[in-house]
Structure formats: C-alpha cells, structure tokens
Image (cartoon, rainbow, N blue to C red):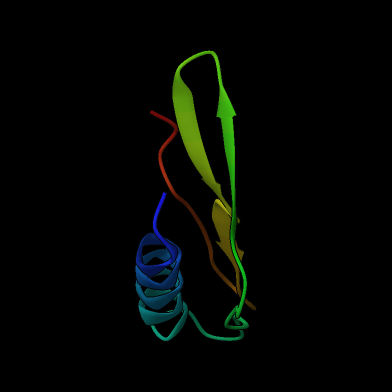
Length: 57
C-alpha cells in the first residue's frame, strides 16, 4: 500500500464534496481489508440537501 494511494482517495473524495452543498472536505482516510476485499473510508458524503454514497464492490 502506498501513501500516494491514500492521497488520491482524499483528492477524489474532496472533488465530489465540492459538488455537494453543505458537505465538509476530509483530510484523512482509512482502509479496511477483510476477506480479500479492500474498502476505503469514508464511503459516503452528507450535505445539506443531498447524500452521496460510493458503491460497495
């Protein structure tokens, strides 16, 4: 796992946050690896009137 990957996730997350009114950017992410599956967190963005959830793979 490379730190650059985490930075890329933060960048993509915050780009989506910029599109959702009232959503707050993040400066940290974490990863869960379980049963050969990798998931990044946070997985959802909550704004004033809209909610976005990244699809579960």
